[in-house]
Length: 208
Image (cartoon, rainbow, N blue to C red; front, side, top):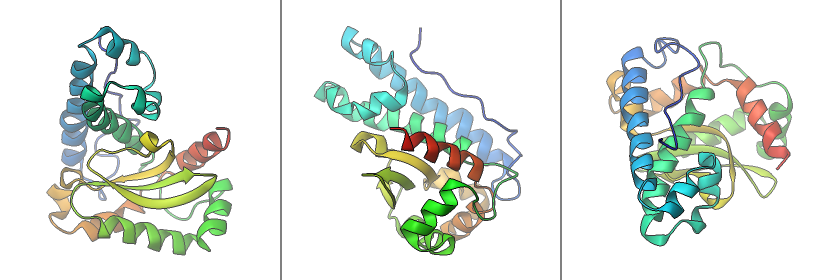
């Protein structure tokens, strides 16, 4: 039995149109995300120790990455990160999203960044300035909110930091519609952020 499985999207593939097109969403979900899940399961299904590690949620697997045998750690970082990162990504997007946040996250963003617009500008700078493939993140780190980027499929969880909001910067996430115009993709992202989900994740992170 496989340790991890591909989660269903909480909406149709065309739900984020026109900001992210249906074909991109379907390929991204059924090919890219599924590939990370399959490769993670293959990696873990090699020793009893790794199979036991796969009994925990993928978030815990990455949080405890240092306990994974060194010879398998990089594969778990890559494939486990790809699974965890995408599982978060789908949930923080919504066809009914966008606008300015309300609730606790609005207050915290104002406290940390000065205003929502200042946060939005900072996150946009992080995302557009990242070199190559990777992710832009808003994370809870040492009881503060911080925006930064990570390469490839690295997850903040591996540094024992809690991701609140993430944006996939790999070209497969946007190239069919935006080609090399990453800035246009990042700008479109703000129209589909589910602030309800970001609030939920922030409130959960506060309990840790």
